[in-house]
Length: 495
Image (cartoon, rainbow, N blue to C red; front, top):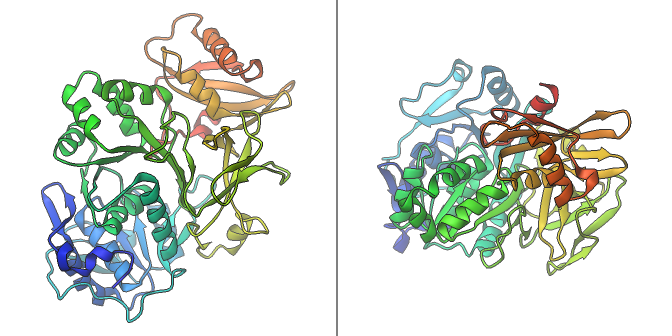
């Protein structure tokens, strides 16, 4: 029996609801039996692939793999043939777990297939003879591969346990909470936080299958206490909530609204807050680190920030030359420089980290400093009270203009404060005089009127500083985004 899920031991928890996907549901007793029946089929495997559709079968498959002590490789059902082929050759799974009736692509034809039967009723949760070591691999989660083929981050069991327990502390998350979300189940947000999180607490998760404001309102009105989403989802909520009293009332009842995977625009924060009286909490993490920081449930939900380091996680901001700008004492007290002009890379240490990139010792070494800190590649500044503000990726969002280091994120937030801006992205482009010039890409609320570009540039200069003024403003109908709602800035810079 895996200590990752104490509620699966049965007893009083057996009849508690664990998982619900649409009109299909499992109690903890039923989940333990279904996963336990699968364990003997996979226990001898080196790794197992999971065809990660948003279904009960995916949740049962991953729980079974964790019970068996076998690393699971979640597969995105929307992956193209080339990406899927790379992941399979790199991770070399022994078999693939899928829902009966799922049509799998040809790339999986050579793997043994095991259909997941959620109605199986074995003798209960079986597992390895001994609980695997905390450093034993639990999942191999592939990164987005924006700078090359996806890399498989080996996530150990200790990282899952520590990050979920730290979030429980930050969010006051208990077995009485009922989580609702519609996130994909092949990445950290949807799978580890959104499925394994409630199961570790002994609570319940209701997965919508497909996101819709009606489903969110229905579940929150029916007793759900927490909502997880990405900015695209919260943007749709913000667009709808003022004219939908039922949605506003349901959101107002929620104990916690959490957004992650990308920054939530300030004006969406404000619209949701005004309509519901509830503020959205943001957190920050990566595939390699799981969760790093969060706004706490008992803290101030401040738009544009991702809160403070989670318990047990060490965080510091570092200049390009290795100079440490600031960090946090053991009790979480911030130390060192703070403020908008002190931009540094976030570096992390702690039990929440991955152990390696699968088959990539070179990439693993390059991602860490000599003293063991993981280089996130994300640039941030810190408020005086320790709140972290992400200003962008080191590769695409740190703009060096006129001798200044400028984070694209703070300019984007300033633009989004303007009433005629719906979406905004900021990039740096080569400039003979400045080194790089600041360029804004804006989706306006309506047709862009004459002079709006200059007005927006002045708007930024007035709110931030003259050297942060965009030198060019381009108007678009939409910004290019990936499945997680993150803006693909390389498409803007080279489009």
